[in-house]
Length: 174
Image (cartoon, rainbow, N blue to C red; front, side, top):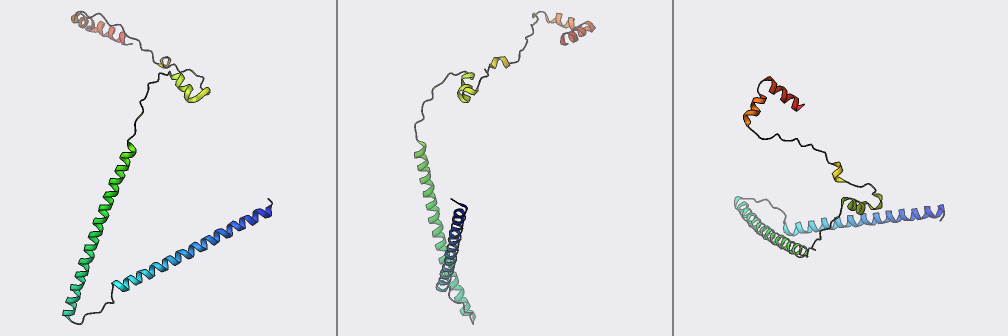
């Protein structure tokens, strides 16, 4: 393909894209216009033009009609809410059933595998791992002090008493 072929292809893609965008824009405008027409038709059908009452009797009658309409709308709203709640509960129950059905599977019995740390690292890292891992070599050496023979406690206190005893304690700690 030459340079000319690439530019023609790019122009073709650009023109197709702009054409699609223009068609989409027209469709959205048409949908908005239809929604507005439906809204106005509904308003003409359900909401008659308002006429101001001339006397209190007409005003009272208008109030009664409005209260009846409000009660009807409230009943419809309540019925709809109950239907929605019932549907949501059914949906939740069905989701729980699906989860229960999906969650019931046999767990395989796991076998204990004895593997050294070196073998595990070699399995994970492959042939790249050359260093042996000796865990015991990294442990800190701890020296255990020899316990003095348990004897008479009075003797220990007498040894520590006075300046000689304190001197021995400091020498032992250092």
